[in-house]
Length: 138
Image (cartoon, rainbow, N blue to C red):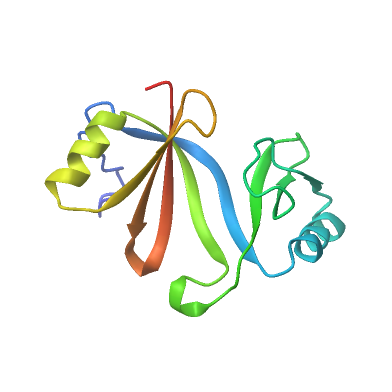
């Protein structure tokens, strides 16, 4: 927001965040952590749909069945960001965002094909927060 209360937007050339996809949380005890969210908040827990880390991760779903928290069996240390492993954002305009990162010398990782049509771009944000930018069919 500007001092006049108007929103500021960057000319994005089609590159946009369209929504929060999920938050990835580290836990040394995935089952107990998942049970906490289920018992306290009424979430439901399910196995991941891919073969990634079978038995080592769980999805926690909201009341609509949408997976919004991804629990992964990992140690939790302050040096590497604490319990929040990453924040995943649904995005559009992958080429523009990649060009922007390259022109600024921002290192990133890329994963294609975990889910058909999906590309994941991993980038470190300030304060050691890792972002997962998710692009579908781009």
